[in-house]
Length: 196
Image: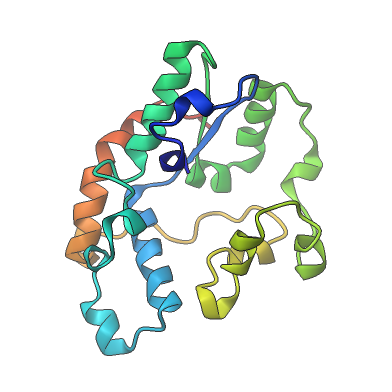
């Protein structure tokens, strides 16, 4: 959500650690397109013609940097100003594929003790209703409103990623456009990630 603080860096509170969770842009925009299709309950015909480029730019990309550039900008700002010399970057596929390795490194990086309990948790509404989180974010999870976090909220442990990055021939032109624009930022962040 770094796009939300771009041009407002002077308002960032001091004394916090920052973590950047990244994911391959093709997966991000493919998933995002599917969520919007569900959110707006598009018919099969509409689904076949819908493109992310049909949406207002701020709704999809935030800016010409396609959200990844905003993350990289924030990371560079934190480093340049000395607010944080070594922000933590985690790739989602690495976390899902090697949760113990990544979480151990993460805990060490942010100065908290690792616990094997971090690798499993209880699932269900009784648990998620006790979380301290944005009520707006939780409302967007209702299936008829897109179900943005359904899989995560129903989970009880880290599962390996189920899908590989689709071949370019399987992608719609809008996904290709957005992923290619975000790729250079993603690659720079990816090089800084915790490695399994």
